[in-house]
Image (cartoon, rainbow, N blue to C red; front, side):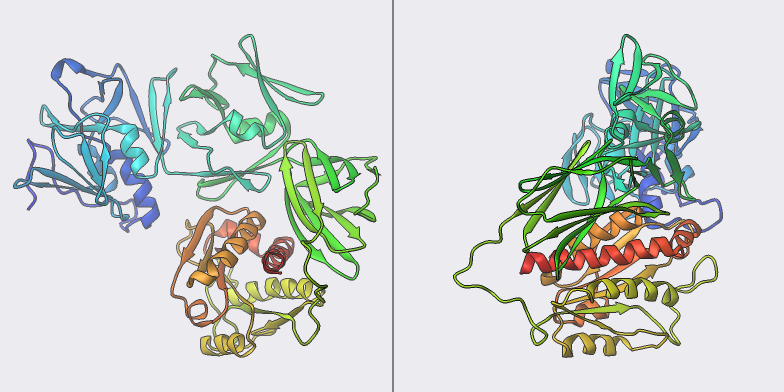
Length: 559
């Protein structure tokens, strides 16, 4: 049963600004922020932190009990956690155990004077053991923040601890999974080294100056020891900048989603040269390129699309290759910016693509020898692909923020995928619907199973609250995981939305189909920003092409 520890620990109820609970993810990343908190050492090792500021999700908070420094660890009082974000804290007097529940699937238990805590039943070692200090409980800020999936930072110049929900940043379509985003009252900050390299810049220090260099371009940003509220800081000892500030310096574009949970930082990469080599081609650029690819035959071709890219004036193809007969290139589109390079070959080759800063290489390899020639599949032995645009007819699916419907969004995307795949004579493509009709879930499964399909791909768009955002891919059976993983990789690259992960679920169409099957949730119709992007024909083209490329990649791995 619940009782008090000293005068403090109680069972706090969740409080929210509009009287409704926040989403599970929101809670799990916000509640933590204050839960933080419980720790003890001998009194001589405890001291108040001098004039320390606490910033939670961009807002300064002022608990009536100051933070403590314990063995150089910042300790924060727990009591205001429940009041701010609804952490449940319970005390079991029989076992002398504190249990903290963040309402998002994370339960933490600990005992006074014991460095072993349990996170969802798994033992972890605390940096400092919990203990009651003058009727207050304390815990190491950064450690609990890490447990609960938060981002924690230290701004030494401002003597400020900042902790916030996890946020994502993508550079030229590539999500930087290891790049923390810090939220302060005057902006969101990212470490310069994390974002500069993908953009093709080298970070240097000259005396006390921070320099960005890319070829002849050279930008002096700041003195390393200086701070500018709206532009740059030193956080955890790293030079950090706001995406907006960096975009002004180098001429990039920074764009946040409506809820400030995901940022895209894009700068055009110019392709400066294309060289044929004996085993393929090399594509020179300013920075690391984002790309997608697929193959065609009759004649054998490899098609590579470079995103956020333009051709520099005067680009030409140089060199010779025994494997590549011809290289074609063009500015495939300007909205979005995309360069397409096509390799024409006299025979099919296995190939690999490696992208580094300033160079993308396509390496061709001879197909593995076989005891006897293997003929290409003919019309009687095709690779059967079933594409399933969700909903349709009387089932409109989810409603979008602009009054649109899911059924009308996913159909044209699936048709783009269909049109690309049909160019390959090895493929037989079946659509569960080609118009505004409603095949039942049972019908869709029967179509795939009766056709003895090799893969099944179901197209959907998500719905929840206006703040929900991101891309998801689902599968059910073990045989589907590899296919789903390839699909998810291509999908997240194409959408540029937050990667919500590859997941398992019991959706009828992926559970009951007998072949590798996956269901994609492209983005959230209920999120105004994502919905607007998904309605853009250029976006739909990109996703449709990405799904075709994913299926081609899976096919090539299996054949």
